[in-house]
Length: 559
Image 1: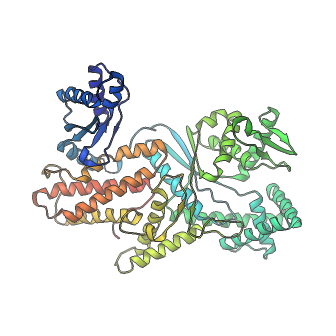
Image 2 (image 1 turned 45 degrees about the vertical axis):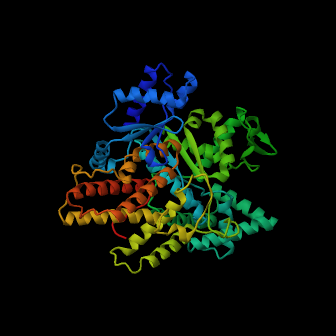
């Protein structure tokens, strides 16, 4: 790669000047007028050599110039000693050809080749409606899964769901009190709100729900079992509809009814080994010893808590698929809780603790504020998708499109996912319908439309029998070319930091460059330069498609 070539050139110059060969740092200047790569190696070296940075930069450039790589057109010194490299016309033409040759493989790397990775995300709970927080978790998790796949790993997607626990008992109690029949997903939501309200306000009803909770764990009451089984099946079937809309799938499903049993055994064994201890009838892990806080792993009734189930889950996952790395994607509000779980895991499953990476993200809200499933003030995933889809249909109603419904859904999902993934995952997001659906920039539809525009140009070129070629190239290098070759670097950084927003930011800049190019240049009608411009357009389209795929966003051929 060009990066390694430049690093070797700079490092070799430092060695010839008897300067330390520290790790050479390269970056892209914010302004393309300053070249394609820049290094501060002279400024770092000047501190060791006690020289003027600009004078040292001149010496380094003179050494590099003696054996300048063919891919470099010129080397300049800027500011207080930065060394700026501008790449050659041939380099950019060759990079376009590389994109055309690699096609769907363009941007992939082998950083994680041979590694087995399990990624757990989304995790909606049966007996509750899937809400917009799960949509955010799904968008982040699915994108990270795709980025890791693009980096050579074998990836398995996992979904962990709370099909037992007091929230289920509250819902079942609500169903009993509201007629005893399970009808649809909205009814389950209402039943949960009823049970949650009763649990908090009435001690007698609270006791009844606690008894019901144990019956559900033990599967000991036929009437309760019937309600439970129907409610669980209804929830899981509804979730599958939502996963299909979000263009995601799961290889493995894990449930608290499984992990709880094993988790309890793990904690009981850990109690004997003094990893855990008794406290007021419960079993706890004293996190204060490690700068954390105490968490309950078995409650006073001897039932496993979320924490114990999480320990059981780690082992169940590994027994199902012996992973090298296990990612757990959750909202940041449980970050403190998860730190305690990971610390306890270091004692009971030290080998699995080393393999586990927790990635947290912020919260997704509408302008109405924070949600609460307990009070029923929940913005459901279904509502969000339907509302965005309706607005897309309104915008596109005058366009005569085949498969209009399918395209509307793709644009709606693209709008939602882009809005989630356009900034660092740790930040909270207030969803704005107008901004999410803008075709003017910084949105999913903007990226999709840029890709669609490129596809339409390629269709027109095929009709005129113009074949792409990188030979009859225009003299000047375009901004698009100076961005396209960076795509593999962006993918590597997104993988290294588990941050899809690097891909989102890059694609937005790339789409802007293409739209400006489209507005200013003839492409199909460019005469002898048309084949090169078609090649450039195809390279752009390939990069956009591959980049959008990494974000979990479809690239419609027509919009």
